Length: 66
Image 1 (tube, helix red, strand yellow):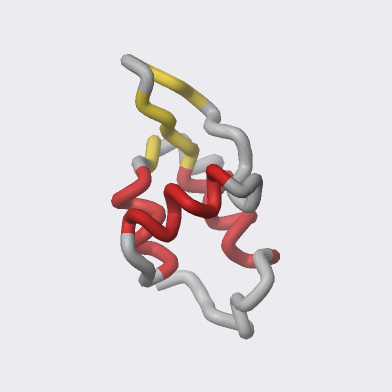
Image 2 (cartoon, rainbow, N blue to C red):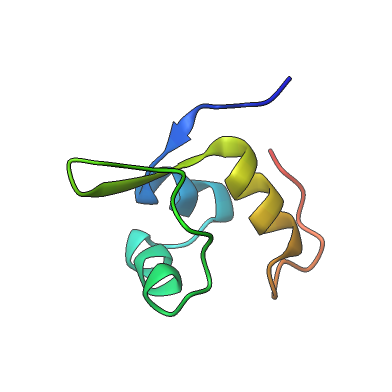
């Protein structure tokens, strides 16, 4: 079953263990997928979108989801 929970910058940062500003920088430089939803000017991603991106992003070094 798909995980359609919406994640913010903070949720993504916690998942990949970086600072929120790092995630914002990833988006600014095109290293983060396009948001699944923008509400009130704030971007959100589905948990499954982030997990798939995280699994294939450079520097992942084989980390596993918690």
